[in-house]
Image (cartoon, rainbow, N blue to C red; front, side, top):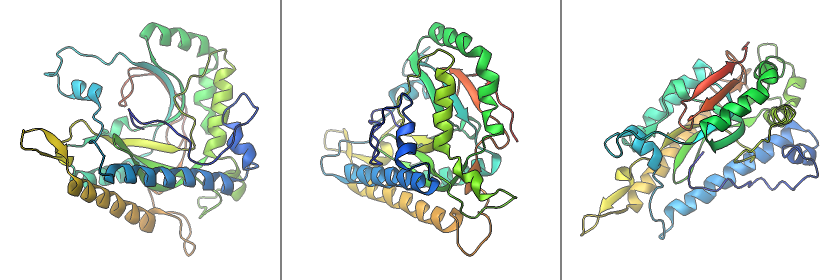
Length: 320
């Protein structure tokens, strides 16, 4: 999610002898979707608490600005600059109802941080699997050619492997924000979806994509395998909203502004929990609070300088 922050697994999972890194959590949870959901929740809550403490600490030195994104957004900083980091990924694209919810969340965040860079809705994505990152264009093209015989099968994989995500919540750190989800475990099923379908979780999908991709003969060089299902929705490219000027005219972190920022995030998260999480006394989940991966579009096999939702689609899988 965030440049400049370590991708640390805070779920408590132990290692596994398997050569597929996603097996460890599935083995420890014995494949139980409720146990997998609990591990994803532990990671999410622990990380938010950890980041909140850092942002409010007296030693906090300020938000982490994305310097590459700054150059892209303001060509005057370095005219002609282009992002050199070419990547290769499988993205899950959100359906319209989820994009509508994210647009509403972004508007709420902008009321407190009007200079926040927000991800354009047509660029929203969740990285189901990162093959590699920060490579040259030629290196990425070579990998695409090696994987090409299996690309159609992998991008269409969600057509028959339909994993469900629920319980949206903002996850954050000093560099960015994301809307994160948890794997479903049989809660508030609707539209004829049987409970056994939730036994195949998002973590199982990530495991399978890793195995299928590695089976093509390429190395899978992901930056992170932590238990997280998230779409980045905003990044910091200026500290104007979270700092004040000192006597020398230099920006310094403003603790009160940061408290207001975190209070807004927590207010939104409470609203999401009240409005978009499963409730025991209702059937189904409010539109936007549930995502069956592959709905509308299959997986997007994407290459190029795609850090901020750009890049080129090699193949878009079939949706349902």
